[in-house]
Image 1 (cartoon, rainbow over the protein chains, first blue to last red):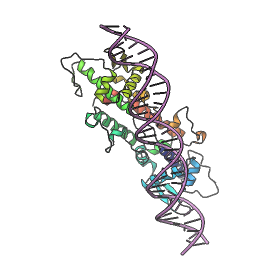
Image 2: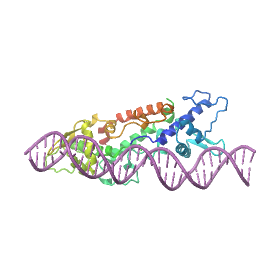
Image 3: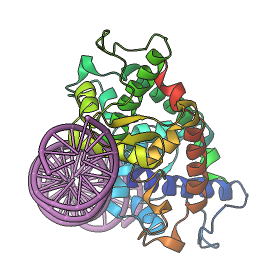
Image 4: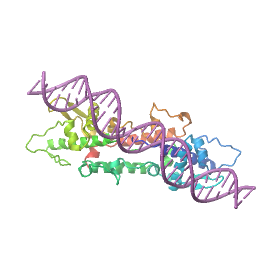
Length: 153
Length: 153
DNA sequence: CGATATCCGTCAAAATTTGTCGTATATTGC
DNA sequence: GCAATATACGACAAATTTTGACGGATATCG
């Protein structure tokens, strides 16, 4: 399919939200309307339910996505009442490749590149080297793009 | 899944074969053992069945792939006995993007970029611009790599 | 006209993604 | 301590996409 999964899309939506909240907390103008109650103090920690509501993503799915981003150290999680997630890293330091590695089934360009694949061609395959080298190029490309670059356009 | 489809893999195998045959016909050394009968004259036109045998790809599938490459002007088809396919273009002039555009369901990074998609977020989506711009970057990246570059490593 | 090979629509099986449910664990406030 | 809230995680059904196979039409050559 050669496409980003819904999970990665949802992650981008959530990270954009976090990133915009971050901007507001620094007194800067966000890139999107956050629909904040201007009288209430800015809530840096946002629950999965809040994010589901504001991104219009299915709660169960985006909740899982947020858990993964948390386990990767991109977000920081807090239990309990008024708990939720907030950014743990500057998005300058997180690459598109890192996001894909967290949420896509694999970042490899083809299934046959996976170590535990069952390709019955194995030694007979004539394009192992071409595929491997193209794969490296693609990986490096995605490693060269930060989420900051992607989200703040 | 963010992966190249089997069809594209098979296409690369076939094109590598054609490319190597081309090299031999010019008196150069191919990058793979072609298992040619050195007494027989070099057959520039290769049937779908031959290609299926030599790439170990399922005949029905690679036959369809070859038809598509032919319709895109990358290969040239000949009907009848001793018919088959041969290269119609220099692989320097064909990009990875062109191959994906021919064989993948779409070259877009996400489904929502497709004009005839049924994304129910539509106007509510907060990452239209980021996704669109990342998509352009990816497309340009794949347009910058020729099949010559990929196959002759 | 018969043998060979490309062309092309349809469709079932296999694999993958997407979304849902149930339950366990951790934190906070009373 | 206990109730309310929120994250963590495994299992699984539904939906979508890919993969491969079948049948038959069309074109070329001797």
